Amino acid sequence: MSLNKVMLIGNLGIDPVVKYLENNRVVAQFTMATHEQFVDKSGERRVETEWHNIEVWDQLARSVDSLKMKGYLKKGTQVYVEGKIRTENYKDKNGNEVPRKKIKANQIQLLGSAKSTDEKQSEPNTDLNG
Image (tube, rainbow, N blue to C red; front, side):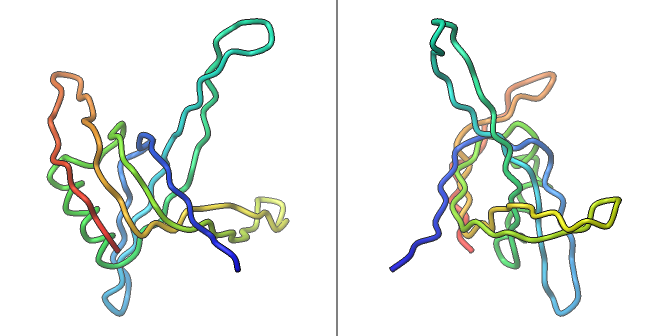
């Protein structure tokens, strides 16, 4: 038996980028930051941030695009993301293969609100499933 499941709560690092492809396919991509707070050996409080690359496809990507257009899903928005870890290789500027981890999301839920420069925008508690 094996299981590949990821559950994250964090904040979007960028506004989602949505691309409409051939054959009615849609993909949305964004980064997400998760934070871990702890006290180190010297007694100093520390925060470590981990960045995640999130990829969403088809109907869920359309929902992401709709929420982005309405201003609900943008940089800073707190979300819950559930999905699977995937590894893909890409070539760096020297032509070397470099592995890159990403999360292929199959569920996204808005949890909080993102602060704009002028006001705090209240967002619906929306559960998106792919």
